[in-house]
Length: 177
Image (cartoon, rainbow, N blue to C red; front, side, top):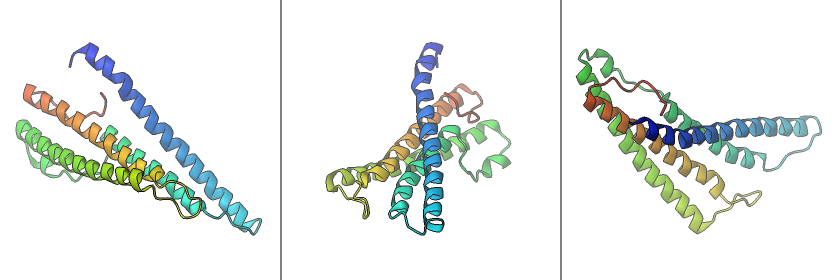
């Protein structure tokens, strides 16, 4: 990839990373704060914060799915890739890794399709949460966006690795653009 294209693409790439990290940090802080508040209200004041589970679960969806997307971005998901450890030939090992990445992309794209159907259903049906009557689109949008980002990262890395494989270069090590 030429330098000017790489520099132009690095700005939105870094922006996505900042967006994900901001969502993860803010939802983590808010969730912990809400849990602490619920504990204080319940055990110190003898009252209850009704609906706290509903709010916390909505925030948790955003935390989990942005975290999953960040794992895809950093290539830090759990992997059981034992076969490539036993293959000594670099070219064959690269082909096996590409095959594994192609399967990962296919599965991720399928789940993204389903997640987007799920979000579109929420747009049409407009379900509400039981306590606060908040739109269920809030947590469902996290599922859709999370899978879109995961697919973006997996497909991008697969294309980069395919190009490197064709050129005979080493690939699959970094999660940077």
